Length: 209
Ligand code: URA
Image (cartoon, rainbow, N blue to C red; front, side, top):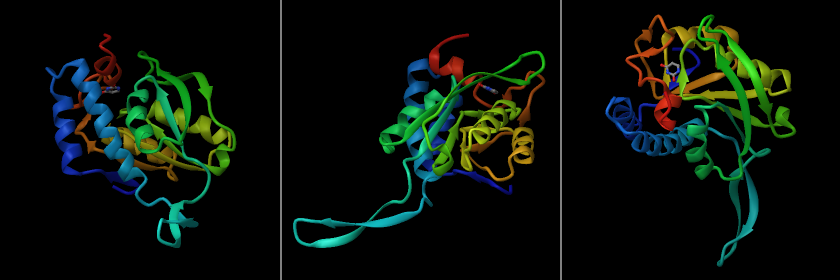
């Protein structure tokens, strides 16, 4: 699918299978989410631009590779996006974090924004928006609308599972935003859940209902 990368790394796929199982406990689900997010972060950042810095090893001076540009921003769509943050920040501890509160109205399935916080110079940074589930696409589209309104230009979207309908909707709204996912599942059901999916990601990671 154009503009979409499926991260098919065997460790990602194995961990995802355990997360999907209905008997996987809240604790295990959270631990797996942290582990898998580290691997997803590795893939979503694999083509970042490098520059060089002059450094001294104990033996000699060299021009060694370092990441180019300003610090990355990880933008979490509350609340389930926070489950992906921990592992990603382990890998990129200097990243800045944005929180975006948008919820899905269960009647209309439309997104409503209630919170937004982001670092400065967002227009000069790569922003990686994270939410485990790309279902209808409404909340991720709304979150990215908000980021673009505040100046963000260079955006990627990272999720764990995506529905084909959600990807189509998302790509129509934001064709410039590349989507990274561990799986494209079969479809959305009538309640807007991804099937086969893993259920409600927020409930599964926090033990709520
Ligand atoms: N959000 C979830 O947590 N799960 C789904 O299947 C769809 C949206």
